[in-house]
Length: 225
Image 1: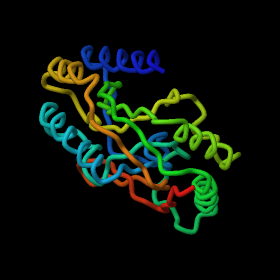
Image 2: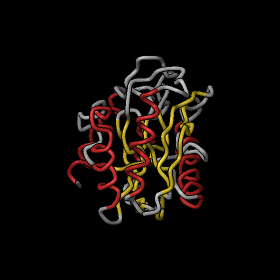
Image 3: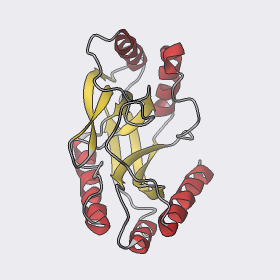
């Protein structure tokens, strides 16, 4: 797991310093990103801590980037489910099957705990790494995949490498001083952002408001096993 984190960070660092980072654009239909997904929302205290760090990195990066870790937007993705479509019909049969699969997985899962153990770079974003405290988060991912069955074939490319994170900032264009952002993150690789608790699992779509793409809950199921 440590090796995967370091490889991910090294890729992001190289891309940022070379001016080859991935920039986010307003979501469009058919994109592999920003489709219906399953997420965990942080408890209120963790959400405030993540928002504080998001404010710091946003101030350093400058205007125009997406403060994904702001209050109401910060989250941990369990898995993406499909390409983006807009709108998502409320009576869509596939959406109904997603909801049922999430509910079945949630029935067997207690509230989840993570330690937010530091920051890292990926091409185009700054993340807060979330380390599971116990096996329950990874069991939830595996259990949800099993419940989805054939409806869960979208995200099967190992993109997350078994890692958990909360994105703080998505880059939407070039930085004036990329080296300063790299240095800022490097000094916070082991930043203790405290613990995060998730008490529900949410099925969401994403909405762009002109400044950020944030999750909008379609269905929320308590984790209460």
